[in-house]
Image 1 (tube, rainbow, N blue to C red):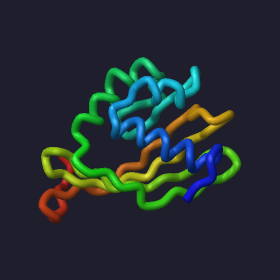
Image 2: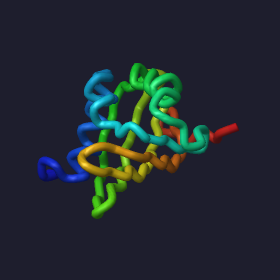
Image 3: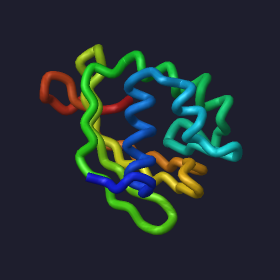
Image 4: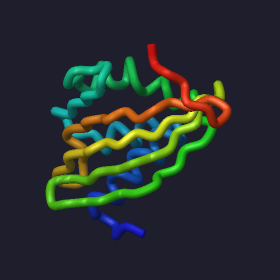
Length: 122
């Protein structure tokens, strides 16, 4: 269990807000200069994040944080996400955190599965 105010608690709060479709809570957790980078997104800002990424919370069928490892500047989080379409994937993210807000997210994608079988990306 993470301590209140720890970087791990900020990570958990961010995913709780995302999965719970609580945008106002997420807005408070993201710093003004927030950036989000993934294999699909190159350091997009808050506005682009809410336009492109936020709607994906509607696809959450099951979400489980498997581990959070924090350091002084942020935390790594690995999670298992299952979509309403039956796809499952495991990703790892590093979140940079300052003053209780996420300033930067870097996403590292894992493999995708459907019905327990690997699905190659095309």
